[in-house]
Picture (cartoon, rainbow, N blue to C red):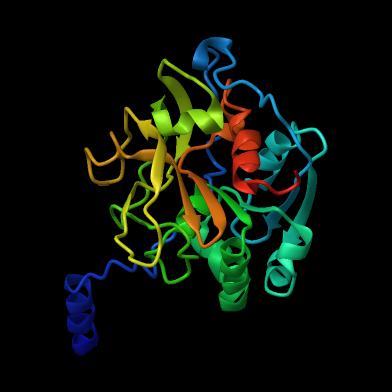
Length: 278
């Protein structure tokens, strides 16, 4: 027993940037998240896209994805969109490129999603994106895209700033970066977004993946449960990148069920689809 304790202590000291055991949380069911009535002052912060084309979207449905309903409801605002829910066991065997323009992983638990689709599923998603497919990941789906988890996809040159992820939930202030205007239009003022333990992203420094570009940035933070203070402000709330021929969009917070931001997911889907469907 003593030998095992010593080995465990040494393993903790020899900290690795690959956080194999850390997993983003499932939303807490005991304490429902209440949206304050004055969030974004009932304004439409991000307008609906002016140019819309039919796109085909695969939405992961399975372990670790309780947020799929919210993301799908937001996505269905796009006229002509075709959405198919794909089970974990089918991710590995489906010819994604033949049937879809974009694949979506919603909020919940990134590790559960990654482990559910398995090595073969993760490789199939990577191949889909590298051949020109789009990827949209929200909260857990953003964790899943990162390059520092043993269960991750490694399609975004990003890692998490800390292995302590349980920062809490709140409505935080964001600002849109200039690079975000092609996706979301012009938004000059800061705005609120729902946050629930999403990743704090920093560059992973992978030579084989192009650098990501922040398109929205956190202006405020929450740091409960002994999580690091000061690392969230100024970090990317949303980012885009490329992987092979494909496009990757990730969002740490939840625009899909934040008043005024419902059009962000449809716009992200259109961007991730690239020229597909035209």
